[in-house]
Length: 265
Ligand SMILES: *[C@@H]1O[C@H](CO)[C@@H](O)[C@H](O)[C@H]1NC(C)=O
Ligand SMILES: *[C@@H]1O[C@H](CO)[C@@H](O)[C@H](O)[C@H]1NC(C)=O
Image: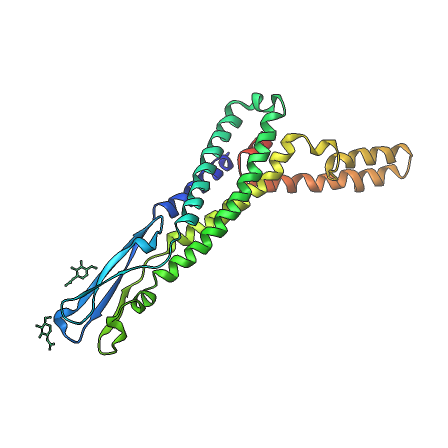
C-alpha cells in the first residue's frame, strides 16, 4: 500500500527541495580606513538561480565609493527543467494511482491503458535521468558562483592586501544536495517500474521472454518425451519458477510505483 505513495512523494521531495530554496552568504570587507568598512555584506539568492541577476554593493575602500557587483552564471534552465519534470511526474503518478485504485477494471479492459502507462513511464524515466544530471551540473555551478572565496575575488578592495576581506558564512546547500539525490532516486524508481508496467502490456507473454511462462511450456514438452520427468520438472521448471517468484515480488515491494501496486492486488 505504501508504495503507491512513493512516486508522488519522491516527486514532491524533489521539487520542494529545489524549487523552494532560498539561501545566502555573508562577507565582510574591513578597510584600512574603518569608516569605509562593511562587515556584513549579505548576498541572497534563490530558485531559479539566475545568479547574474543577483546584484550587491561592496565598499571599494577608496572614500565613499561603492562597487556594484553581480554573481556569475545562470543555472535557471537546468533548475527549472528539473522542477518541471518533478511537478509533471507528481501529477502523473497521482493520477495513475487514482486510476489503479478506483478504475482498475477500466485500466485492464483493453490494452490502451497499460500501453500509454508503459510509454509515459519510459519517457519519465528518461526525463528524470536527464533532468537530474543537468541539475547536478547546474548545482555545482551554483556552488562555485556562491562560494564566498570566489565572490571575494570579484571585489577590487580585496586586491589590496591592507584591506581584510573575509567570509562570514557560506550558503547552506543541504536541501539542494537532497534534491539531486531525490532526482536520481526518482529515476531509479521510475526505471525500475518500467518492468512492472511492461508486464501489464501483455507483450512479454507473446514471445522473447525467457522467465516463467516459456519455462513452463518447455518443461511440459520435455515431460511428454518421458525424459527424466520428476527431476527435470522439479529442478528445472518448477525450481526456477519458485526461485524467481519471490525475488520478483521482493523487487515489487522495493521499487514502488503505481504499477507494482496493481501487481500486488
Ligand atoms: C553593508 O552592505 C549591506 C548590503 O549587503 C547594506 O545593506 C548595508 O547598508 C551596508 N552597510 C554599510 C555600513 O554601508
Ligand atoms: C577615512 O574616510 C573618511 C570618509 O571617507 C575620511 O573623511 C577620512 O579622511 C579617511 N581617513 C583616512 C585616514 O584616510
